[in-house]
Image (cartoon, rainbow over all chains, first blue to last red; front, side, top):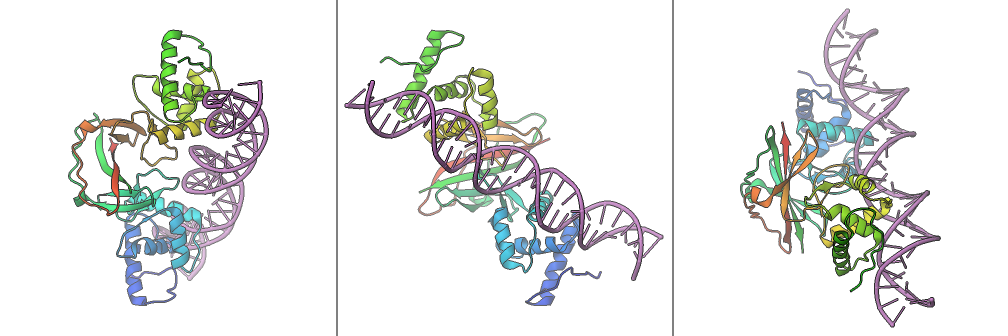
Length: 153
Length: 153
DNA sequence: CAGCTCTTTAGAATCATTATAAACTAAACA
DNA sequence: TGTTTAGTTTATAATGATTCTAAAGAGCTG
């Protein structure tokens, strides 16, 4: 299959880049999302690094501005992040904050929240013993179990 | 000590009422908060029932309107709820929502969140097996461990 | 009662998020 | 390849929870 890459590569290794972009195109098509220029650029920023990370929409705005030679409207960032969340490519982190936090680490895991520094830290599943929920609510099943560990000095 | 109750009792048993109000006056004074008419009325709504409950500021507005023969400004509700949270009389529930949820149950416990009905349900500590956090962050200590169990049909 | 500080208040301001509706574009089809 | 269709992007407006402001009110101490 021939892929029509919807934007030009400004710098870097085109071949490698092409492979990555094709991967995202497949991913998006497979989940019924059209691989637009904006979505591919957002994929690159969110999923193009080895390390996973936490971010708010505001953080993403800054990352896009820094990494991409193009502006993406705020509405598109919201739409895309929400679409990715719905498809399971991102997770929303349950924490009280004026902004919503998302996580590119979609594995089952938990979080530390450093109250002083207002910083989230991953807590892998292996770092938390098994959690046994004894109570049952009839007609309902458990979709997820999320642990937030607040830290102080 | 003589207490000057800063508002009149509209209906009900005055004697019993007086005892409750005095209890709240002590509570507030002991934590450095002046026992104002508004704070006592809010105490009544939040702590005057046997059962604990979850609420948003918006819920509280409705409860106040229904139960108290007096209007309390929105700013005061925010101020008071935040003051009570700071003193440990209320807990903020870590959940993603456009509104902040508070809990009058300040015991160590967790929550179910019914995604379909958008409803919080208490999960007492005894309903959850012990949680063992194996990872340590140096210089930091654990302040709280909160579990959110999401439910689906 | 006087003086002081804390509290309440209405209304304005802020800020994240969502809605709108017009322009745009990927995909399907002729 | 051009046309059609449905999904997307965009600037901008609207919404809504929360916070700010500063002036008036009310506990508290002496």
